[in-house]
Image 1 (cartoon, one colour):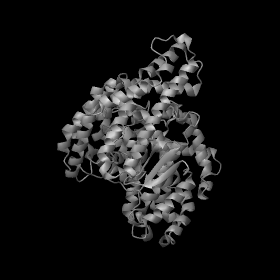
Image 2 (cartoon, one colour; image 1 turned 120 degrees about the horizontal axis):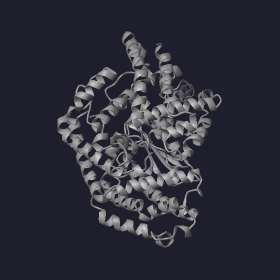
Image 3 (cartoon, helix red, strand yellow; image 1 turned 180 degrees about the vertical axis):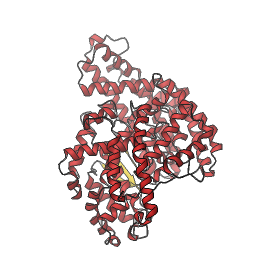
Length: 585
């Protein structure tokens, strides 16, 4: 299904899998992308190779009379004409992937249960067509021809588009159908083993499957990214050109900066438990009618700037953002009588993803250069709206009267009450339930373990002990069983190794970008307090969304927008200032 990640990384997976990888209020279909880079051929390789290859061949040859052959003279064709031919092929790939995205959205929202097998067949066949289009040799010939003649005729954006197209073509072409078939089979087996093991809290039963998956990931990375360190390659699947040493440096700074504050908050709450109390009206109960929550959340989404002329909003078991195109962006959320925050904060989060998609460059639509830069960048947009805006005092100054209107039982609750309710800090066992202060430590634990699995310093058989030790050291809690510990996340069972760092990288980017927005958008927080979100949205449209993948990395984008590469001190300051005030540290 269509993901908030570059299309080259996408692969549709069953909704039951996708929703878990997404993490705390992250788009569910994002997980389709988790395995996309290494399983790009899997659907076509299992059961549909012959038919899909045949269809794909027809697609690749459809315009053969207008495409360059391998033997053509590069001097006979203008670089500009070659570039336009290349763009035509890239746009057709995007159109096919848009169709896949629509099938994925329907699967998670509207499709009857009895259609699962047929939909799986449809998506598998279409995935084969998409792959055949991606590895069309004429794409490689056009890229090589343009590079031989020279790229002087191309502007900065066009050169970036050529860069992205070349990288994707080379990566897709290195993945053999045999390796993809092996990966698809193992992914299915390992996921099923994880489901069983998690339900029984039995890591020992899962360990052999995970060992095989890690070994296969290494094999695939050696084939598709031969010039990269293995774990760097795994990270690169989700955040281009980000490397493990850079992440380690950043995470060490974050851990050092947050650990004392987490300890201080815990001590304050232990001394005065009332600090984490919320008014009775803001606790769960039948007064929180899901139908009214849906109406309220639609009002909030529209106010933030989600364009309902080019999108829609529905309910799903797990929130996600999908659709087929930036002019057809579909968000979902869910509502609970017991946890009203889930609905409104999930809506704000998904709106962040959706407005990034809707704000992509119209001039370069359907080309790789128009696509979001990576998972961390996409998360930065959802988290900027959810945390920097949606969890701010300014936002609740505006939103509290709306809550009172839809839920009269909260009329005695002030904006400060709502603000405090959505900003409680309490170390938890489960990553997806973590607050914004302790969440980075959950991610750091997973990053360190993944790095160890790749460099050999951590063995699969020792994971429960390693996990529990780190949880105790970083968060002061120990899982009672492996179900609440090392087995809680689906990522590794799907081979999505290298995905976790994106969550915290995105949170840090959000703080840095928002800090710059406050500097450049006059009176930003006063505007938010009055429900004037358009200035921020337009600033993000220009500075982030429209840029797509023009910049080669998140660091390069941040430098262009904020005048510096990723600076974790900004994130630490944001959290320190906010929670020092809330908890009177």
